Image 1: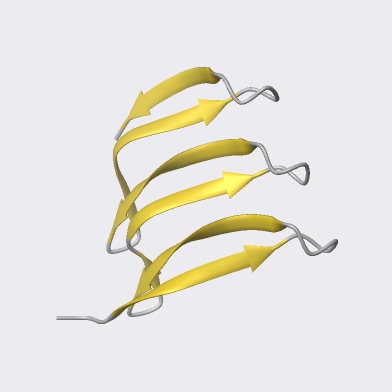
Image 2 (image 1 turned 90 degrees about the vertical axis):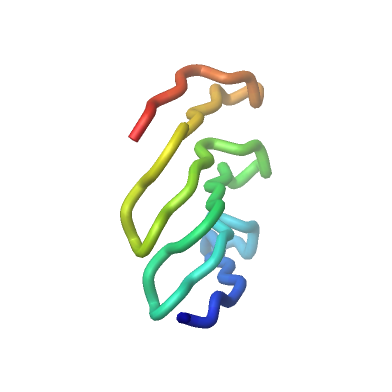
Length: 70
């Protein structure tokens, strides 16, 4: 079984751009992407690098804009 590790990627200004988990260098588990102001832009899950389940996109105020099923 692959070891999952936390992963965080940053915007050039140092704010968090994305965070989630990697397993065997592939996205795995819950992930979230953020705007530079810290509001959540998108969130969803991966299984071995492939998008799975419900993915939510948020507007600039942090409200749900749309939900997509994979």
